[in-house]
Each structure stands twice: as C-alpha cells, then as structure tokens.
Image 1 (spheres, rainbow, N blue to C red):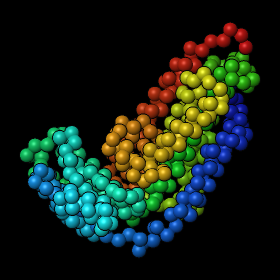
Image 2 (cartoon, rainbow, N blue to C red):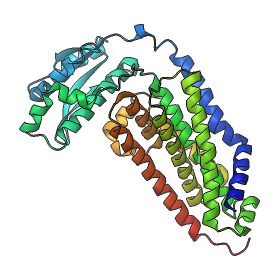
Image 3 (cartoon, helix red, strand yellow):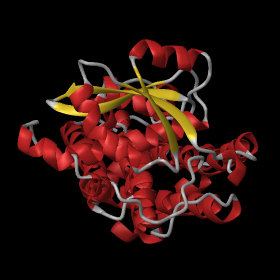
Image 4 (cartoon, helix red, strand yellow):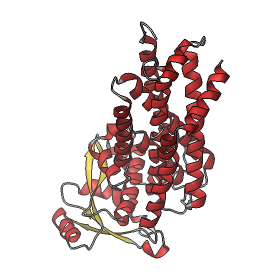
Length: 375
C-alpha cells in the first residue's frame, strides 16, 4: 500500500503545473536576471584594495589594539586608516572610504561593527571580512573577556587560523545566487500544502478517497511526504546543477556537502508548508499566499534584495537567523565555500533538522487529532 500511494503521489505532484513553475522554472528565470544584473562585476579589475577606516579614540584604544595585528594581515585587501568617529564619518560622506569599523563590546567580547553609506560590492566584501574576524574572535574567546584571553587575541595566526579560508577563489557575487537556492528550498512549502490537501478529507475528493483507504492515516502521510521529498530533492539538484554548470556560479569544490544541504533544506521547506496547511483553517489560496510570503520574506532577510540585510539581521535580531531556512542554507553554502573546518557547516545542518522536526511534530499532532463525523 505504501508503494501504491507513493507512486500515485509522484504522478500528482508532477501534474501540478503551478508547483512545477514556482519550484523549478521561477528560480531558473530569476537566476538569469541576476546574471544579467551582475554581469561584469566578477571581473578581476572590479576588485581593488578597499579603503576603510577604523575608529580609534581613548575610550576604545585598548580594544582597537587587539585588532590592529589582525587587520594588518589583510593589507592586500583593505587599505586601513585609523581615525576618530568624526573623521570616519567625514571620510565616508566624502566617498573616500567604503565603510568604517568600530569596536564594540557585545557579550563581554570586543566585536567589529561596520557602518556604511551605500550597498555596493565593496561593502559586501568588508562585511564578509568582519564576519570572519568576529567569528574567529568568538572562537578564541569562548567565554568572557579577561586579561589571559586578550593575550590570545594578540596572536594574529591564532585568530586567522580559526577563520582560515578553504583556498577557493573568492566570489562575493555568488552569495546572491545562493539565496535563489534557499528561496527554491522554501518553495517546497507548496508541496507541503499539496500533501495536506491530499490527506485532509475536507480538502478535496482525492483526500476523501485517501481517508477511505485501508492504510493507516500516518502510513499514508509518510508515503505522500516521501513522494513530495523525492520530487523536491530532484528539483533542488536540477537548480543547483543549472546554477553551477549553466550559469557558472562558483559553489566551491565540496559538491557532496552542497547537495546534502540543498536536499535537507528542501525537505525542511516541505515540512514548513505541511505545518501551515495543517494548522491554518483558511482556504487554499490564502495558505498559498502565506507560503509564498514566508518564502519571499525569508529570502529578503537572507540578503536576496539587499546584500547588507543579513548583516543587519545578525546585529539587531540574531534569533531570526536561526528560524529562517533561506538564511541558514545560504550561510551553509558560504561556510562550505570559505572555511576548511566543517563544524560551522554541520551547525547549520542541525539547525535545519531542528526546524524540520518541529514542523513535522506539529503537523502530525494536528493530523492525529482530526476526526470527521462523515465523509
């Protein structure tokens, strides 16, 4: 019975033209527009040493000294000027620097914070650099600031080893295309909606027949969900191959891990849609609109429309980063691209699995409680 439901469900998913468009064709079309918009920005001459300022005054001089050694190791990427905040603001207003950095204590740790005036590629590069340094500092500190730990930070190699690049040629444009795969993963929520419509007796005639079948409801749900996961996993793989080999987007060399993250994120998207479909009592069109809105909001917060949005979310609402599958998947791709250490990547995978588990638990709980007087 499981095999029968699985095969029939595959046929139903493949016949859904709207779902095929949103899950497969729309991300590919969007990638074409992205490629047109960013054409020429990846040329070697587009990347020059970036002028930045670091705010240094009496109040934060000791903290800035911690970073001077680290930043001096980036002289091939950043042209650094040390000045006070008033001078940094003036340089930024005059367009003489792309951004300026300040050192602020967060959770008893000195962290770099970036101030910008416009959102261009140089600002994105500076953001990536500051993110790497901040993450390295967190790893080195691993707790609160004290004199013994500050001496560790003065060791440039200690910090840079923690944020060591994987050796790939850096491609800061690629991050925008990573969000397309994240968006496609969340569009799996449309499959999740279809799954619920197929098994809730009050949703459609197919669902009525499904509930009259001799198979248990949970077994049937498992078969339909497996079919949806199969379709969307293939879909994610096709989009990834399209971006990598047709659009020539640089994902790095860790292809197996990239595919793994894409599949898990896609199934997480299905679980989110299934939960929305099971919990909400509104009509099918309303649920569809909610799923699309959630997907686009997640894409926006992950930096699809504004490359500094992800940075601002991390600064002002870090909890959002842990519940946004688009941002988590994008982050996983970036960590695979930049870091040799896979532990960063596995944390993102665990995060996706937790979201998936929560959504599935809620969905199953709702489905088990549903009873019908007659069908």
